[in-house]
Figure 1: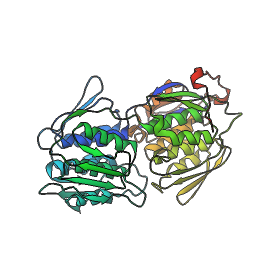
Figure 2: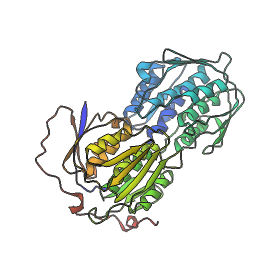
Figure 3: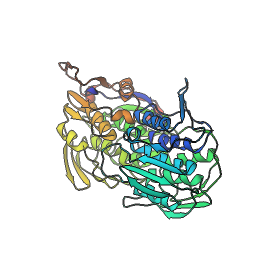
Figure 4: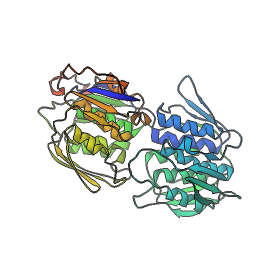
Length: 457
């Protein structure tokens, strides 16, 4: 098992390229089960969640190849198996998206209840509601979802919203199932996230008939078969946001390339509100350097809500940033109200945070210092790495297998930006005799004039 060792106090500088979206590629890979022809994803990230999904598909009989150019080729020729066991599904929640494709193509499925990050209760009742609405008989037996539709799925009209709003994976699952159902399906309360739109665009390339992508009302006209396709998934907006925050928290000049600023407008709005300078173009966002001794961010109030509002997957990273703000920030988590396991670890580093129900009050600025901290989930681990970048001394982040689920070699990419971060074995001894430089004392290399503008409030 590995850990990250971070020597804090360096302003980041340089460019980083965003990978394909982890959250988009998982259901796209599941969509390969809908056809017996190859599905090609040229920009699938090489992260552990993708590798886990590929193992699920291989257990169902799919042939998986990663070409020399990095493209993934998945072919589910013949009738795929119908059972995705706990051994393969337990590692991540996205694996539940094989349920809809299996039901649509083979008319039966047995999928173990999924695992994933420990961020609160995340039931799949809306997934099951959708399958039942399409005519499947569904039951839970020994931790497995068992479903069958002897005569195939039949289109229907249904509402798919829940207490915390739309379900992203549930929308994906039902949309995939409906592509091969008889007749028309109308989904009300569908998720509008870019990852859902991306999946829909992939399905359309495969021959599906879908209207309303990006809106809460989707219409799917069932077809008799789908064919193979090549589909590049959208850039990972959460990875992009994490690197933007990394630049901002260190007062550095980081240009995040191959991203979609239109997918992160709420983050940029909050950056402007915090008086953190940045600029952006069609496919890039750049933080503008500032003296962290002279300038502290303004405190902000952030509430996580479904897209296009502030994403829950950036909540922990934003909290790390707000520990540097001068004053009180309020963060409210409405998607996963228990997603605060990073709070205790940030407090170990000196953060002043108080939780009240589904909200957290962050008092700043905190004088963070290096500590031994434990990652509890994917985004919490990213927040601890960000905090380590500005903490005095050495921070050791344990259980970094969490961050490997969604960030490809993040330590190497941060190192290329000037961070002092290494991956070592958990039991390695570390020499901490050399003090770190404070980020505010480091010389700052200016970006090009194009990136030197600040946000307009």
